[in-house]
Amino acid sequence: MSLGAIFLYIFGNYFFKDFIKDKFLVRFKKLEIKFKKSEFMYLMVYRFIGGIPFALSNVLPCIFNVKVRNFFWATFFGITPQLFLMVSIGSGLEKIIEQNLETPKIINLLYSPDIYIPMLGFVGLIILTIIARKIFYKN
Image 1 (cartoon, rainbow, N blue to C red):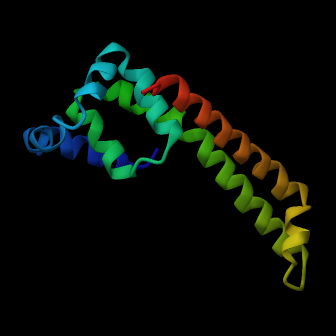
Image 2: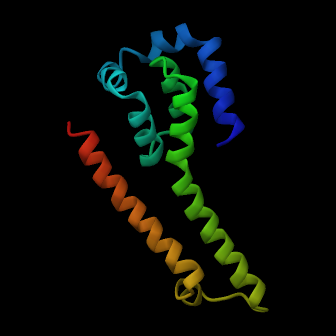
Image 3: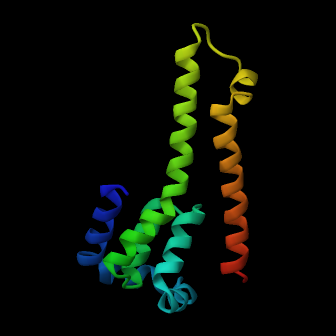
């Protein structure tokens, strides 16, 4: 987890909490009710699904009074799969570039197991997030 996420959470929670609540709480009233039921689970799903600007997803826990412990662990478990896949793809690209003296063609990149296995994982992650959105956000 990045220090920036923790910094934004602490900064927003202690210095701008009233301002943030006044601006955003009216828009997110239904979400506040869901967060009160299970803040860890909803925050983790929020982090896992993505599609939410990172700065906003760091400020939302301040609005809903999420405990720092729940914020830390939900962020850790929610972001880990995405980070793992991105690092795997980057590592595979680095390996292919180091092995070739010439620039590899895109077809060669796509057929390399160092690339297509993480890409399949990425597609699986996208499918999983679509399913999670349908389960948690039935509206």
